[in-house]
Amino acid sequence: MNERDYMKLALEQALKARQLDEVPVGAVVVDSKGDVIGQGHNQTITQTDPSAHAEMLALRSAAKKTGNYRLGGATLYTTIEPCIMCMGAVIHARLSRVVFGAPDPRWGAAGALYNFASDARLNHNLEVVSGICEDETRAIIRSFFRNKRRKKCQTS
Image 1 (cartoon, rainbow, N blue to C red):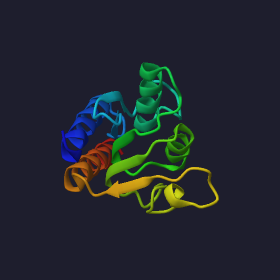
Image 2: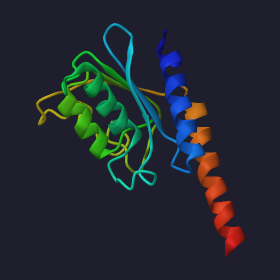
Image 3: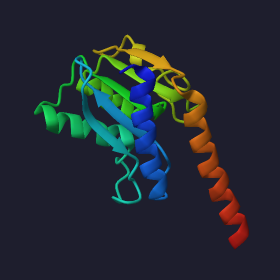
């Protein structure tokens, strides 16, 4: 599998979030052998949990599967640039890479707003790759919020 294939899996997770009327973000964690070891989609509303972001759930799933909270050598594929919380968890888990589709200029912590991945003050740095399936990931997010605004206008 290549990076686009893994991002397609993350996109499938994003669509699961959208079906739940959650912000459609999806993520998968892939180990150094190329095996998917964790996956998740946004469930903050469903779980009534502000930390139930797709990336956090994928990391939890991977840690449970491997029996280790350290995921060295692993890559996180996520449809949207991770936020501060998620990048903090990625750094604590010692992932090697983060690959994302579209940047998040409001919350992004992998280059758009903050750049935790290469902050020399932190004890772990990692590679960041952006723009994989960017058009697809951006389209899902935009259509979700467009529909939300449309529904809000109709009920007002």
